[in-house]
Image (cartoon, rainbow, N blue to C red; front, side, top):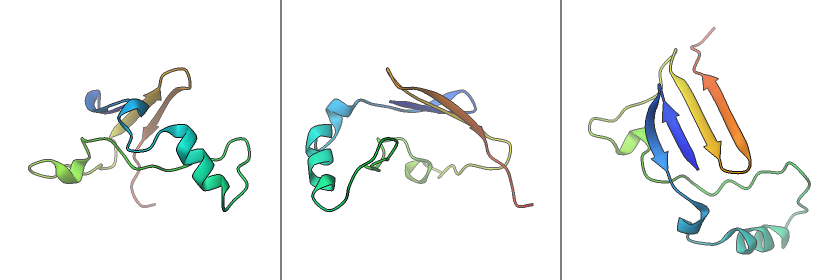
Length: 83
C-alpha cells in the first residue's frame, strides 16, 4: 500500500504490518454484518499522515493524491475547494 501527495511518497506499508491480519478482520466484521462484494473495511492508516508532520501538512485545493495497493490497482484524485 502506498500514497503520494503531489508526487511525494507519504505512506508506504504492507498488510503484513497491520495489528490484525485480513482474515481476522473479515471474520470479526462478519460477526455483526453481512459483507458484500465491494464492501470496504476501514482499518486506519500507516505512518505518514499530515497531522503527524512538523509542521502539520494538510491537503489543499489543487493537490494531487495518488494511492495504490499491489494486485488491486491505483487511483488518483485532485483536491478541490468549496464551490
